[in-house]
Image 1 (spheres, rainbow, N blue to C red):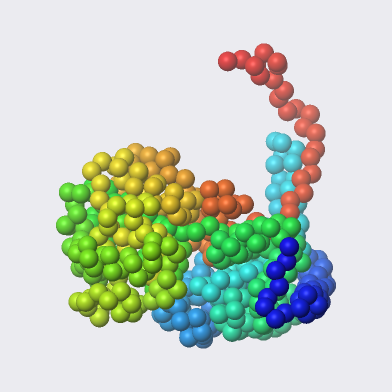
Image 2: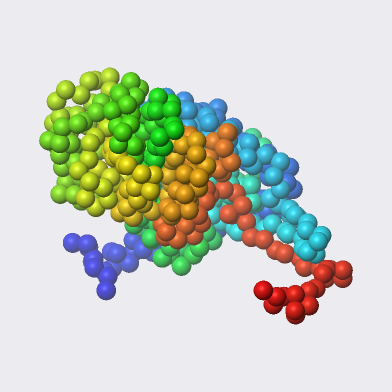
Length: 474
């Protein structure tokens, strides 16, 4: 049964639904016309378009980054600029010279030929935390496979996403690409986002659990994300000074609004004081007083429930004001807090989209794994873990025991889990968390998730066919 808003008649609601449908039908029709022309283009011309999208954001990084911070009140200028610059470079570099149109692979020993074909019109529901580079990366992935795309920005970041599409289209127009390849809903709403999910051929949804669930319920294929809560396991053989530098860098990047940012440090009990000292050295303020920890806990997660809306993207200075904790230096980069347990016993073990780390200790490596897994089972299962260790057996023990899609070893989670120039993860803004996180993919989303594959199968006359005895031999 539909429940109508107060004061709104069934007729008015039906008219709104009709207006949404007509608006989206017009956009999708224009998108399909552009896509049908674009899918006839050869690989080199397609790649020109893809490059142009990334280069447009690279060239306008400062403008777009400032718009995003000013509009959303999240993050900071320098890190937003760095994201625009580095993500545009890494996404293009990993796509450059990769086949994505026509015949892309021949496997003669199996008699197979793989032919890539576009999906059609792609929808992009962009988040408020990444209103620029999410649009950029999704557009590059869509175009790489011969698709068109329609963007539904987050209402609190619409100006940034609309401007991003404008600079992208200026670059595409300069190349003579079809009009309406990349479109954007200029006045987004929940109704338009929901309608877009149903109107396109596939939707990429980078947002909260409710939004992702809506995308999966739209009746069309969808690629969504799961919630982050990056656990940091610190081994006894790790250089704690280096670990602290990386953890603080990751935790503070863009004021900690990324799902890839470090959340919880799990270190040996006998290294506790050394680890705390190293974190302080690199700009952290440590809360060792249980009463102050309670102030932080109770204001950030009132009654142990969802995070307070005032905290995401907040600076350390603002967190000090919100929590009422005295004595936090104005130049502190992050806050590290003692804990009263782990998992459901400690709300601070949840994902924190602000520069606060929860601190845990362990005796045996197996205990560290247990703490991390318990925290993730509460929130963040399927997403990511960071491991600081030089013992392969310990690293692989974590990977075998904890159900997440990616493990970064001796790296900065905040900047590297989403793919970097010096690791093999796909550069992305959409991190799939597998079925653990209720997602359709368990890797970093990239262009090959936006193509259909046709397989030509030839008979292989000399293919070895085993006997029944060979097949069933033990």
